[in-house]
Length: 497
Image (cartoon, rainbow, N blue to C red; front, top):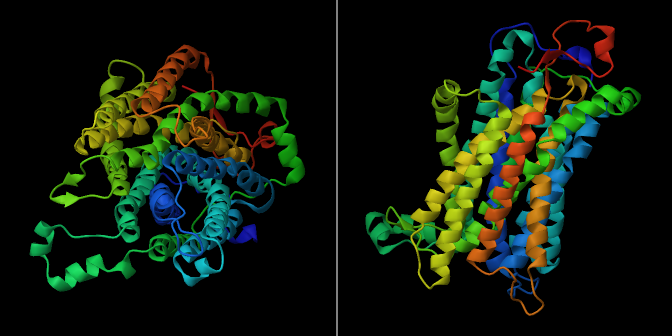
C-alpha cells in the first residue's frame, strides 16, 4: 500500500471522522456473520451433526459446550498475531482485508456440511476446518478493527471517542440481534403453530415449513454472504480511513521490549484476569443457556421460539441499555460518586453473578421436573446484559486509550485475551466434569452455582485490587512531527484524570 494515497494521521477536525460510517457498517455486517454462525453451533453439534453416511453423529451437551468454548478461546487467542502483523509489518487495512477473505472461506466450508460434499468428506472435518478458518479470520482482524476506530480520532475530536465506541458496540449488537433471530430458524425445521397457520395463507405456511429453507448450507451460508458484504464495505472506505503506517519489525521490537512500554503493558493487563471471568460466564448464553432453554416452555407472544433464538434478547437489551446507561445512569451516578472505568467494571462483575444465580434457580425448578416459562431466562438476560454494558464497552475503550499509539492493536489484545482466558476456563471446566460413563460431575443447578461463587470471589478480589491502578491515556498525535522522546513508542499522552 502506498501510504501517500491515504491519511496517515487524524485530520484536525472537531466533528466525526469520515471513515467512521464505513467502520460501523463493516462491523454490523461482520457481527451478523459471526453471531449468526455462533448462535447455532451448540445446537447443531447436539442435534443435527451427521456423519458422511447421513447418520446422526451428535455430541453430548457437555462435550459440545467444551468444544464450542475451545473454538471461541482459539479465536480470541489469535488476535496477538493479527496485532503484530498490523502494527509491525502490513498495517491494519491490509490485515483486515486479507484475513476477511479467509473468514469468508471459513463460512463457505461450514456451508458444505449441508451439501453433497458432506457425503465425500466427513462433516466433522468440514466443521473443524471451517471453524479454524473463521478463528483465523475473525481472530486476526479483531484487534485491528476496534483500534481502527480509535485511530480516526485526535486531540480536536477526542470528546467524541466514548460516543463512537458506544456506537461501534451498538453496531455489533444490531448485527447480532438480527442474525440470532434469523439464522437458528434457517437451521431448525419450522412448524407453524395452529394459531399462526390460521392467520397466514397456505402458500406462506408451506414456504415457512419448507425443508429446503431449513438446512445447514443455508444457515451457515447466509452468514458467509454477510461477511462478504462486510469485506466490500471495508474496502470501499479505504480512502476515508486514517491509515496508521506500520512501524517496521526493528522499531516494533524496540518498542515492545522498551522498559517504559513494559510497565504500560503490565498496567493494562491488571483488569484482564477479572474481566476474563466475566466472559467465562457471559459466553455461556451461547452454550449452557441454550441447553437449559431446551427444557423450558418457550411459548411467548403466541410463538414457540427455538432455544437458540432466545439469546436474541441480549443484543436487543444492549441496544436499549447502551444509550440508557450513557445518557442517564452514568450522569446520575456521577452526581454522587466519580464513576471511573474500573468502578464500572467492578459493578458489572457483581451484576453478572446475579444473572447466573437466577439461571441456577431456574435450573433448580427444571431439576425438580418443572418446565418453567422462558420469561425467567429473559429476566436473567436483562441482568446479564446490564453486567455486559458495564464491563465490555468500558474495557474495550480502556484497552485502547491506555495503550501506546504505535501498539494500539497489541494493547487491544488485552481486551480480547480476557475473552480467550474466560473461554479456556469454561472449556476446561466442561472437559473436567465429564465422566467416562457419560455422566457429569456438576449436575444441573450445581453447575451454574459453581460459576456464581467463582464470579463473586472474582468481583470481591477486583474491588480490593482496582484502587491500586495508575494509568495514562494515549491518543493518536495530530501533529506532523512528534517530539523525539515520544516517537520511540508513539506516545501522545495525557495524565489519567
